[in-house]
Image (cartoon, rainbow, N blue to C red):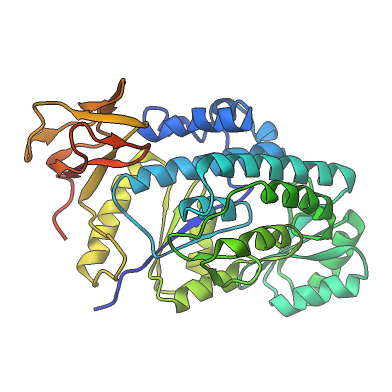
Length: 399
C-alpha cells in the first residue's frame, strides 16, 4: 500500500477576494480575527468582510488579510486532529507555514506580516515596478529573456512548468516580454500588483524586515518547513531570519518546492487559505498526487471525506493522524476547564452545543458527533486551542 503523507501549503498575496471571511463568521476559528486586529492595530474584520477589491489589492491589506484567512482555515483544520508531515507557503504564505509549524506564534506572525506588508508597499511606492506571467516557455528561456532585455527585470516566481513570473520596471518588463514572445512564449499576462516583488527593488523592505525579525522569537518547527529561497526543508529556527530576508529579493522556487515535497513522499497537498492557486499548480506539476483546498467550513467536511477515502487505499505514515472521522473540541481561551456534568462518553453532541466552561468562557462544539472522551481533566488549567474533547462524526465511515 502507498503511504499517505500530507503537506500543508499556504497561498500568497493575490489570492484574496472581497468578503472572503463571510463563511467563517459563525465558526469558532473566527476568534482569531479579534486577536489579529489587536496585534496589528488594524481593522482586520473590515478587510475580511467589507473591503472592496481595490482596497484589498493594496499590499499592506492583501498580505494581512490573506495571512489571517490562512490562519483561520488552519485552526479549523487542526480542530479535526489532522496533522501534516510538512509545511510550505508561497511568498507571503511562508509566514503562514512558519506559524503552522510553530516557528512563529500567531501574534508574532501578525506583527511580522503587518510590517512586511507596510515595508513592501513603501518600497513599491518609492520605485515603480510591476509583474507579468510568462506562459508556455521553459525556465531557462524566461531567464534568458530577462538577461537579454538588459534592464531592471528579473525572474520573480518559478510557479510551474510553463508558468514563470517576471518583475521589474515598466520598460524592462516590456522588453523582456517582447523577447520572451520571440523565444516562443504563448502568452504574457500582466499581474495587477503595485510593485516588483522578489527582486532587488524590495531591498529597502528587506532592511526593515531584518529589524523586525531581530526582535521576534523564532522557535524550531514541529515539522520541516520548505523555504522559497532554496526549495529545501529547514528544521532549525536560526535559519529563518536569513531565509525570510533573502526571500524578499530572490525568486520564489515554488515548482522546485513541489518536486522536493514529492521526493520526500508527499501524496496529499492541502491548500489552506483563500483561492485555489496552489491547488492548480500542484495539478499541473505533479501527476497522480491529490491536491485539495479549504476555503469554507463546508470544505472541512469534504476534506475529511476525501482523506477518509485516501486512507482506505493507503497506509497512514508515521507522524500522521489521518483519522477523518475524528474531530477535536479545543479551548477558546486560557483558563480552568470545567466540563458540563452531563457530558458522558457515547452521547451525541450537536454543533453549537455547550460542553463546558474555560474560566468564564463557554465552550461550544464546532461539529456534530458522538463524544469519545474528554482530553482535559475537570479543574485542569488549559491554554488557547488545547484539545478538550474528542468526537467521532457520523458523516463518514470508519477508515
